Length: 167
Image (cartoon, rainbow, N blue to C red; front, side, top):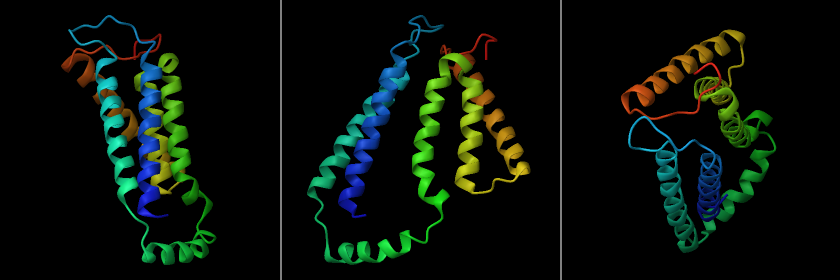
C-alpha cells in the first residue's frame, strides 16, 4: 500500500468514526449534572476527527507514488499470501469491536461496554488467546472502565450512558 492510499484510507476511517459518533450521540439525554451536555465532548472529538481527515486527504492528494513504492507493492503481494488470517483481520475486527461498543452503550452502559471492548481488543492485539490472558485482560478492562466512569461522572460531573443498574 502506498503512502497516498494510506492517507486516503486514514481520512475515510476518521470520517467514518466521526459520523458514527454524531449518529450515536444524537439520542443522548440533554440534561447533565454540570453545564456541559453529555454529547459535547464526543462531538468535539468527532469534529477534530473530521478536520484531521481533511488534512490526511489533502496530504494524500499531494503525495506522488514513487518507484520504490511500486517495487515494494510487488514484493508485498507475495508476503501477504503468507500472513496469518488473524493478522489480516485485525483492522476489520477492531472496527467491528468499536461498532459493537457504540451499539451496546444504551443497553449495557459505559462500564460494561468498555470492559468488554478493552478485553476483546487487548486479546486481539496481543495475539494471546489463552484463558489466563483473557482473565487478565478482563481485570484490566474492568479497572479501566470503573476508573474512567468515576473520573467522568464525579470528577468532570458528566452524565454517561448507564444501564438499568446504574453503571
